[in-house]
Image (cartoon, rainbow, N blue to C red; front, side, top):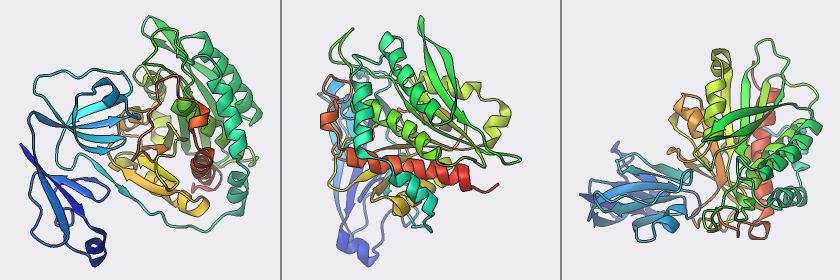
Length: 401
């Protein structure tokens, strides 16, 4: 099998030259790179490379470098950080790291990631004030407090210690709290669910969440797993969104803020949460934002990746607009959802989006003892938190009935 990798140069793109995508052909896209089985047109707009598989072309979506760390001999054709195109030997099994990466056969059109420029909306001073109060120093302190716990493994004492810390912050932000227990192999874990109620006659429901657990795949049982980026950053973003929302005494729509357990063992907490939704809540659930790894600056620009599915497009657009209106973030978009807590929602037809650090360079310390706060950029974390909090406030306090 052959694939053609084609790059649109900047000059040609500005001139509006034809691409395979604009001709209606199915392509996979990574920024300016298109991948397709069909050779590119013979014009000046593209420069291309033909690649022949020795085995099977596969697409990988990974956290940091988890796939490459577990499978160092993989033949990587395209390295785009979170996303890889690999040539994998036929009938060979790859080494698994549950919850760390997903591998699927390549298909034209299966991967779509590119820049997405949001549209600046009229700024609401109430939102600008609430998200502008989010402090990089406070984010750092909260991340360091969670990362100081020896390990937040979903079924161990450190996870319960983290739940206690988070409960105090969410309760202080005016939320109703519930610990949602679920089975995890031969043991158990918990989601921490925080709610605020809206006053509309028929309120919609919005969910923002992140996984609280951490893991170390290098050190074995009992190893230190600080999980500063993966995923103390995401958990702190959820809590700071609750604090920002507490500036609004009355909401129009219902909000559910969730810290999931069991993500590192295979998205168990988010799957359990989705299964417990009754029919009425599923019908009124209008958007889900999941935050996973929000503090590693892997690119020169402050960049966030918005990852969802085609059904998530409205949420993606809203987040990109919030980024443009209230932050300095550059936004990337992927319509290929893998390996985080937004996936169980999408699997049930619920529009959900992952917000994750722009990962063209990929964070190398996830799932190790080196995932500590000194490796993070808390200005990036602040900007991503501002975007997510602005989305939540816009929907819950000002959204249409």
